[in-house]
Length: 242
Image (tube, rainbow, N blue to C red):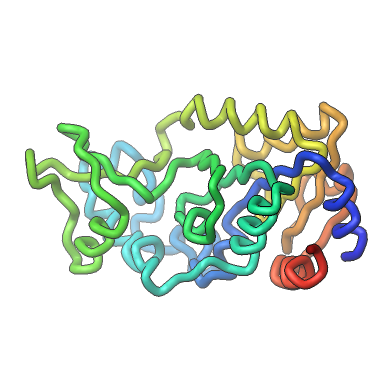
Protein backbone atom coordinates (compact mmCIF):
# COMPACT_ATOMS: atom_id res chain seq x y z
CA UNK A 1 0.00 0.00 0.00
CA UNK A 2 3.05 2.25 0.11
CA UNK A 3 2.77 2.24 -3.68
CA UNK A 4 -0.69 3.77 -3.40
CA UNK A 5 0.56 6.43 -0.96
CA UNK A 6 3.36 7.36 -3.36
CA UNK A 7 1.01 7.40 -6.33
CA UNK A 8 -1.33 9.78 -4.50
CA UNK A 9 1.57 12.06 -3.62
CA UNK A 10 2.75 12.15 -7.25
CA UNK A 11 -0.70 12.79 -8.72
CA UNK A 12 -1.97 16.30 -9.42
CA UNK A 13 -5.66 15.66 -10.12
CA UNK A 14 -7.28 12.75 -8.29
CA UNK A 15 -10.92 11.75 -8.77
CA UNK A 16 -12.84 8.93 -7.06
CA UNK A 17 -15.60 6.74 -8.49
CA UNK A 18 -17.54 5.02 -5.72
CA UNK A 19 -20.07 2.21 -5.64
CA UNK A 20 -22.17 0.28 -3.15
CA UNK A 21 -19.15 -1.43 -1.60
CA UNK A 22 -18.12 1.64 0.36
CA UNK A 23 -21.55 1.99 1.96
CA UNK A 24 -21.71 -1.65 3.05
CA UNK A 25 -18.87 -0.69 5.41
CA UNK A 26 -21.36 1.67 7.03
CA UNK A 27 -23.89 -1.10 7.49
CA UNK A 28 -26.04 -0.40 4.44
CA UNK A 29 -26.89 -3.71 2.80
CA UNK A 30 -26.06 -4.00 -0.86
CA UNK A 31 -28.75 -4.46 -3.46
CA UNK A 32 -27.70 -7.78 -4.95
CA UNK A 33 -26.26 -9.63 -1.95
CA UNK A 34 -27.95 -12.62 -0.32
CA UNK A 35 -29.97 -10.33 1.96
CA UNK A 36 -30.07 -7.44 -0.48
CA UNK A 37 -32.96 -5.31 -1.59
CA UNK A 38 -33.45 -7.34 -4.75
CA UNK A 39 -34.16 -10.48 -2.70
CA UNK A 40 -37.36 -8.93 -1.38
CA UNK A 41 -40.87 -9.53 -2.63
CA UNK A 42 -41.69 -7.48 -5.75
CA UNK A 43 -37.97 -6.84 -6.26
CA UNK A 44 -38.43 -6.05 -9.95
CA UNK A 45 -40.95 -3.33 -9.08
CA UNK A 46 -39.07 -1.48 -6.30
CA UNK A 47 -37.04 0.85 -8.52
CA UNK A 48 -39.30 0.78 -11.59
CA UNK A 49 -40.67 4.26 -12.32
CA UNK A 50 -43.94 2.98 -13.79
CA UNK A 51 -44.63 0.93 -10.67
CA UNK A 52 -43.73 3.87 -8.45
CA UNK A 53 -46.48 5.94 -10.05
CA UNK A 54 -48.91 3.00 -9.79
CA UNK A 55 -48.12 2.16 -6.17
CA UNK A 56 -45.38 4.15 -4.38
CA UNK A 57 -45.84 2.03 -1.25
CA UNK A 58 -43.91 -0.79 -2.96
CA UNK A 59 -40.80 1.39 -3.05
CA UNK A 60 -41.20 2.99 0.37
CA UNK A 61 -42.01 -0.29 2.15
CA UNK A 62 -39.01 -2.09 0.63
CA UNK A 63 -36.61 0.83 1.10
CA UNK A 64 -37.65 1.65 4.68
CA UNK A 65 -35.06 -0.50 6.46
CA UNK A 66 -32.42 -0.21 3.74
CA UNK A 67 -32.35 3.46 2.81
CA UNK A 68 -34.42 5.42 5.31
CA UNK A 69 -32.61 4.27 8.45
CA UNK A 70 -29.73 6.74 8.12
CA UNK A 71 -30.12 7.70 11.77
CA UNK A 72 -28.52 4.30 12.47
CA UNK A 73 -25.77 4.71 9.85
CA UNK A 74 -22.53 6.70 9.89
CA UNK A 75 -19.97 7.43 7.15
CA UNK A 76 -17.31 4.73 6.84
CA UNK A 77 -13.55 5.23 6.93
CA UNK A 78 -13.69 5.46 3.11
CA UNK A 79 -16.19 8.33 3.16
CA UNK A 80 -14.21 10.14 5.84
CA UNK A 81 -10.85 9.67 4.17
CA UNK A 82 -12.14 10.88 0.80
CA UNK A 83 -13.46 14.00 2.51
CA UNK A 84 -10.06 14.52 4.15
CA UNK A 85 -8.25 14.12 0.82
CA UNK A 86 -10.57 16.73 -0.70
CA UNK A 87 -9.96 19.11 2.19
CA UNK A 88 -6.21 18.73 1.63
CA UNK A 89 -6.70 19.67 -2.03
CA UNK A 90 -5.64 16.26 -3.32
CA UNK A 91 -9.05 14.86 -4.31
CA UNK A 92 -10.94 17.04 -6.79
CA UNK A 93 -14.29 15.24 -7.05
CA UNK A 94 -16.26 12.18 -5.97
CA UNK A 95 -18.35 10.57 -8.70
CA UNK A 96 -20.74 8.17 -7.03
CA UNK A 97 -23.20 5.50 -8.08
CA UNK A 98 -24.70 5.58 -4.58
CA UNK A 99 -27.95 7.34 -3.76
CA UNK A 100 -27.25 7.67 -0.02
CA UNK A 101 -25.88 10.93 1.35
CA UNK A 102 -22.92 9.52 3.29
CA UNK A 103 -20.29 11.35 1.21
CA UNK A 104 -21.93 14.65 2.08
CA UNK A 105 -22.31 13.67 5.74
CA UNK A 106 -18.59 12.88 5.85
CA UNK A 107 -17.81 16.38 4.58
CA UNK A 108 -17.20 15.91 0.85
CA UNK A 109 -18.12 19.07 -1.03
CA UNK A 110 -17.90 18.11 -4.72
CA UNK A 111 -20.07 15.02 -5.07
CA UNK A 112 -21.52 14.04 -8.45
CA UNK A 113 -24.38 11.54 -7.84
CA UNK A 114 -24.84 9.76 -11.16
CA UNK A 115 -28.03 8.04 -10.00
CA UNK A 116 -29.43 10.97 -8.06
CA UNK A 117 -29.67 11.36 -4.30
CA UNK A 118 -32.04 10.70 -1.43
CA UNK A 119 -31.05 14.09 -0.05
CA UNK A 120 -34.10 15.65 -1.68
CA UNK A 121 -37.65 14.44 -2.38
CA UNK A 122 -39.96 16.17 -4.85
CA UNK A 123 -43.75 16.30 -5.07
CA UNK A 124 -44.80 14.66 -8.34
CA UNK A 125 -47.60 17.20 -8.81
CA UNK A 126 -46.52 20.65 -7.58
CA UNK A 127 -42.73 20.09 -7.39
CA UNK A 128 -42.49 21.15 -3.74
CA UNK A 129 -39.39 19.71 -2.08
CA UNK A 130 -38.81 18.07 1.29
CA UNK A 131 -35.61 16.94 3.00
CA UNK A 132 -34.44 13.38 3.50
CA UNK A 133 -34.85 13.70 7.26
CA UNK A 134 -38.48 14.78 6.93
CA UNK A 135 -39.28 11.93 4.55
CA UNK A 136 -37.46 9.35 6.69
CA UNK A 137 -39.52 10.35 9.72
CA UNK A 138 -42.72 9.66 7.77
CA UNK A 139 -41.51 6.46 6.08
CA UNK A 140 -40.39 5.00 9.41
CA UNK A 141 -43.98 5.23 10.67
CA UNK A 142 -45.00 2.99 7.77
CA UNK A 143 -46.66 5.76 5.76
CA UNK A 144 -46.06 7.03 2.23
CA UNK A 145 -44.91 10.69 2.31
CA UNK A 146 -47.41 13.05 0.68
CA UNK A 147 -47.34 16.77 -0.01
CA UNK A 148 -49.11 18.98 2.52
CA UNK A 149 -50.00 21.43 -0.28
CA UNK A 150 -51.60 19.17 -2.88
CA UNK A 151 -51.62 15.72 -1.24
CA UNK A 152 -49.64 14.13 -4.10
CA UNK A 153 -46.84 11.69 -3.29
CA UNK A 154 -43.22 12.73 -2.84
CA UNK A 155 -40.66 10.87 -4.94
CA UNK A 156 -36.95 10.62 -4.19
CA UNK A 157 -34.66 12.61 -6.47
CA UNK A 158 -33.08 9.41 -7.78
CA UNK A 159 -32.96 7.68 -11.15
CA UNK A 160 -35.48 4.85 -11.36
CA UNK A 161 -35.34 2.12 -13.98
CA UNK A 162 -37.04 3.57 -17.03
CA UNK A 163 -35.50 7.02 -16.52
CA UNK A 164 -32.38 8.61 -17.97
CA UNK A 165 -29.40 9.71 -15.91
CA UNK A 166 -29.17 13.47 -15.31
CA UNK A 167 -27.28 14.73 -18.35
CA UNK A 168 -25.57 17.61 -16.55
CA UNK A 169 -24.16 15.35 -13.83
CA UNK A 170 -22.99 12.75 -16.35
CA UNK A 171 -21.25 15.38 -18.47
CA UNK A 172 -19.53 16.85 -15.42
CA UNK A 173 -18.43 13.35 -14.36
CA UNK A 174 -16.90 12.76 -17.78
CA UNK A 175 -15.13 16.12 -17.60
CA UNK A 176 -13.67 15.34 -14.17
CA UNK A 177 -12.62 11.86 -15.29
CA UNK A 178 -10.92 13.33 -18.36
CA UNK A 179 -8.92 15.75 -16.19
CA UNK A 180 -7.82 13.08 -13.72
CA UNK A 181 -4.29 11.76 -13.78
CA UNK A 182 -5.45 9.23 -11.16
CA UNK A 183 -8.88 7.73 -10.60
CA UNK A 184 -9.68 5.67 -7.51
CA UNK A 185 -12.40 3.11 -8.28
CA UNK A 186 -13.86 2.07 -4.94
CA UNK A 187 -16.46 -0.57 -4.16
CA UNK A 188 -17.79 -0.90 -7.68
CA UNK A 189 -17.81 -3.93 -9.97
CA UNK A 190 -18.22 -1.60 -12.97
CA UNK A 191 -21.16 -3.47 -14.46
CA UNK A 192 -23.78 -0.68 -14.54
CA UNK A 193 -23.57 1.71 -17.49
CA UNK A 194 -22.96 4.51 -18.14
CA UNK A 195 -21.10 4.78 -14.80
CA UNK A 196 -18.93 1.81 -15.76
CA UNK A 197 -17.63 3.73 -18.77
CA UNK A 198 -16.49 6.79 -16.80
CA UNK A 199 -12.97 5.45 -15.96
CA UNK A 200 -12.36 5.10 -19.69
CA UNK A 201 -12.09 8.89 -19.96
CA UNK A 202 -9.22 8.87 -17.47
CA UNK A 203 -7.42 6.11 -19.31
CA UNK A 204 -7.97 7.73 -22.72
CA UNK A 205 -6.28 10.89 -21.48
CA UNK A 206 -3.23 9.10 -20.10
CA UNK A 207 -4.37 8.86 -16.47
CA UNK A 208 -4.00 5.86 -14.18
CA UNK A 209 -6.65 3.91 -12.32
CA UNK A 210 -6.49 2.12 -8.96
CA UNK A 211 -9.22 -0.38 -8.14
CA UNK A 212 -10.24 -1.38 -4.60
CA UNK A 213 -13.05 -3.94 -4.75
CA UNK A 214 -13.71 -7.45 -3.45
CA UNK A 215 -14.68 -8.70 -6.91
CA UNK A 216 -13.01 -8.46 -10.29
CA UNK A 217 -13.88 -5.80 -12.86
CA UNK A 218 -13.48 -5.54 -16.62
CA UNK A 219 -10.71 -2.96 -16.12
CA UNK A 220 -8.49 -5.01 -13.79
CA UNK A 221 -5.91 -5.61 -16.51
CA UNK A 222 -5.56 -1.86 -17.08
CA UNK A 223 -5.28 -0.91 -13.42
CA UNK A 224 -1.95 0.30 -12.02
CA UNK A 225 -2.81 -1.14 -8.61
CA UNK A 226 -5.57 -3.49 -7.37
CA UNK A 227 -6.64 -4.14 -3.78
CA UNK A 228 -9.55 -6.13 -2.34
CA UNK A 229 -10.17 -4.75 1.16
CA UNK A 230 -11.54 -1.20 1.28
CA UNK A 231 -11.35 -0.94 5.05
CA UNK A 232 -7.75 -2.08 5.19
CA UNK A 233 -6.63 0.25 2.40
CA UNK A 234 -8.33 3.34 3.78
CA UNK A 235 -7.30 2.76 7.38
CA UNK A 236 -3.76 2.57 6.03
CA UNK A 237 -4.19 5.82 4.08
CA UNK A 238 -5.62 7.58 7.12
CA UNK A 239 -2.48 6.70 9.07
CA UNK A 240 0.15 7.02 6.36
CA UNK A 241 -0.93 9.77 3.96
CA UNK A 242 -0.42 13.14 5.56
